[in-house]
Length: 129
Image (cartoon, rainbow, N blue to C red; front, side, top):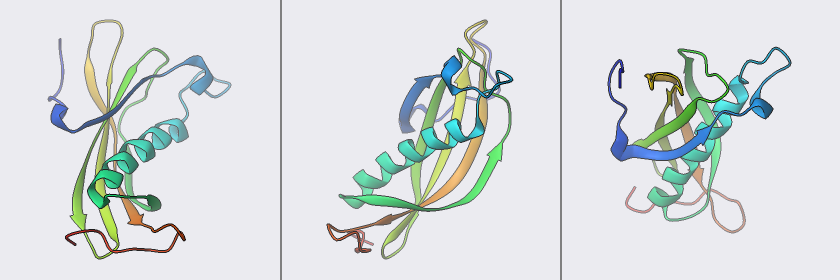
């Protein structure tokens, strides 16, 4: 298996296969589909870290490094980078494993801010923040 560097496997949060339904009319995978996967992956990590409900408040940084193709196995790796009173900064990387040859590449990375919220959808303190 050839790769540039290895993904942070211990931080695996989500894995999906890019399908034809995830493309635009030209057959390219939508960037928004990748962002959606990253939102889910980061949100899952933020929910566990905050011990409750969270919402995406901002995408502070986003880099699309390589294209994603139909059939690619997309894996999102996420970890909490920093914690504030009610918010968390989550670093997320998306990597692909190509079906032909098994090559692994980092395709996208970003820093997302999630805010912990209560039942009334108001910001709440992150435990141990």
